[in-house]
Image (cartoon, rainbow, N blue to C red; front, side, top):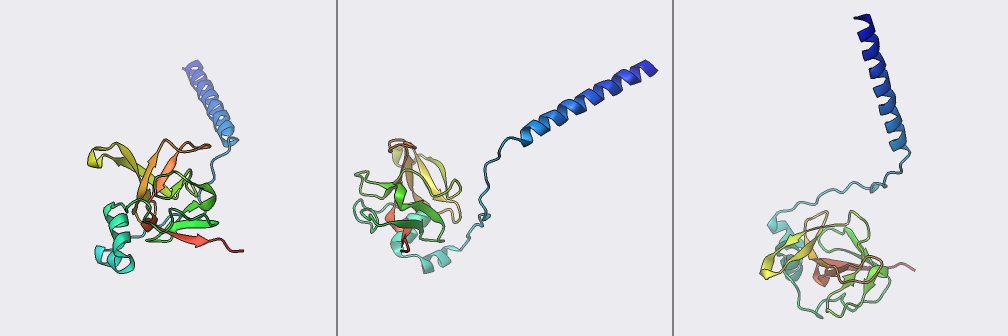
Length: 170
């Protein structure tokens, strides 16, 4: 019995050392930095959204509408600055990631941060694509496609009505 307890104790000690070594090894692995500001959801009633958004913004952001190509006020914008969600001011894109896609909608190859937007499958209108949504208000921004330029190969095809452009300060 004494010998059995010694063996069990030895095994437990060995398991603890292995576990500790594993934890120590993982603690040396750099962790991705979290967004310093915790994303707080913006929740409003339908009536509240209608009060703060134009009819086009409301249709696009709250009902996944789409503006006509070449009709929005930012598709041909080439100024330095940032693009924010028209509903909640969330930072979405930097102008340095905007490119000419020839589609008539503002297109970007990367969001401003990893937590600026999220995507979900969109199978409406018989198409298979990924919808881009504002992480803070859940508003529809546009779609993302795998035909963009490097370094990401992505094309975030956004609705101008879903965004507000903020010119860079000099």
